[in-house]
Image (cartoon, rainbow, N blue to C red; front, side, top):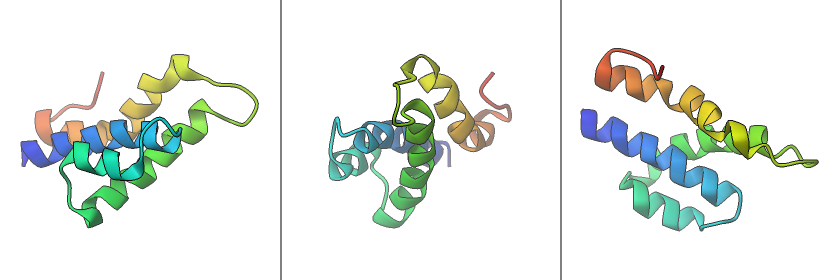
Length: 85
């Protein structure tokens, strides 16, 4: 179970870079090791992060890890019993 949640966290992280055009969606899925169905769920979460760091006017990369932590906290709680903090 811990491995799957780590893969989901990796999927969110890789997918942020896919949403910003740095890698392809397929590359992000490959990096995560998730099934296509599970990957789609984390890809949606990554889209929320991408929206927060790039609002069309400016890049807000200084907050990227905080936004990723928000989206990945459910997976971290399943691994450690605690959120990311």
